Length: 437
Ligand code: FE2
Image 1: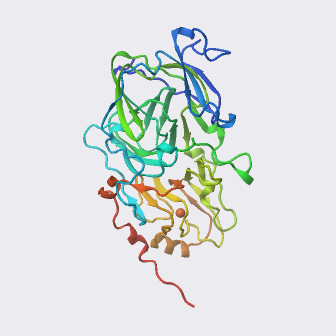
Image 2 (image 1 turned 180 degrees about the horizontal axis):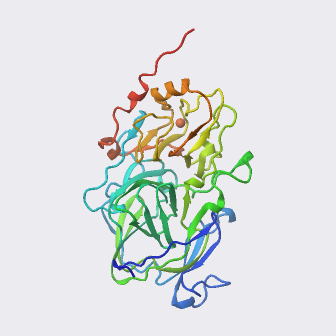
Image 3 (image 1 turned 90 degrees about the vertical axis):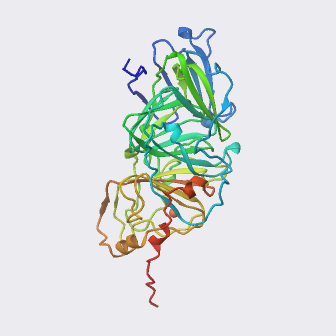
């Protein structure tokens, strides 16, 4: 037991995406051959966590059986607590502009601020009560959550660190992530965020829609993009602290609610099932690209997708723009000018993004909504139009996009913050008229 009194567990992972995992932190804690013995081993309580309706088809069915020190129901009623800067559907605080928007990174806090207190909603869409749409949050914090835990019943969380490593202590085990990695925490999973460094900053997508899955690969075949075995789910790890006060904050129907526990809620000693958090190292992404000319559509960069009821129309796609060779012949190589049916939120994890010469920095964000023109800035256009088209390796870059079905509506914070770049539009204004009939 370290000096801070908190249990520490060495991370250990099980490999695969959506597997039927089975893990126990104590030998003999996991029943064999049945889910609900009359008496669970070691005096544990049996509790099922459903991530889909019981009747979902088998390939979509998600549930996990947990064997825990106390059942989750042991707490007094929730009371409303401050929503902080977290906002929710219908995201109508301010009218949504069709203008292109870009933000500088959130400043790091100057007073002790944990992950939850720093969670700030930048934009969102859809209706969480209809399990549709997303919220896009940012965090910038400098303090670990020790006796406070959080879960959201409104969606699953995709966490993308830009600065500082995180230890996500979840009900189902410990996930450690740093810059270049992501974690997905299923709807309802309780967790606390411990900082492995002094400060941390990053992006959080709250997906109200169907749970993330790997995209179909079509003619690409059985391999590539994000490979199944590179997804890692933690082994069971439990926190047996009790006889002290713990706070559990729930996000439910867009509001935050708080209750007190007299024990840690992360008390699952063993579990089995396919509804569990996972991490993924973005450097493992097997990027596909043109070896002849022109651009394939950026859907080839999809890491994870949350579909909607319309074929090919994602509630949200998580796309990655990793280091890669650019070899296309007689082709304008950066992302081309574009107006899109879908809505594009972008973040930058490392380096520079190849469509922008300056202004889009790690930790920053941009939003180009339905039918709003966007593309390379004037400097990038000029350089790429004249470039010698020899093979070039794009190095040290890691940008991502959350491409969503519905227009992303910025929050009042997003439009009022000093981080909003009011001069963003200027990066295209010096594009010259080159037409010579
Ligand atoms: Fe685009």
